[in-house]
Image (cartoon, rainbow, N blue to C red; front, side, top):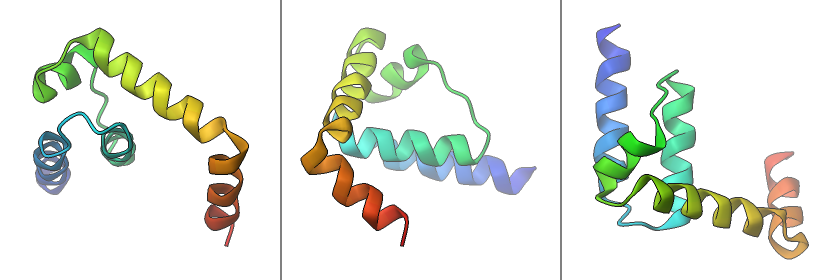
Length: 81
């Protein structure tokens, strides 16, 4: 259990370095979910020093970009290799 907590702490430190970059935030959130660490939008916002709503907007924007064919298709090909 201690290892998982240390991993979460390391990911949280990296999340602080994102400075609001949507791709970075999503990547770190994905890493946190791998550790079964569920943070609320408010908690993430507190870490990034932005509002809960801004975290939601960043996430929604990144997901919208991923759904675009020019972005999503190449990524899907890469992920299925």
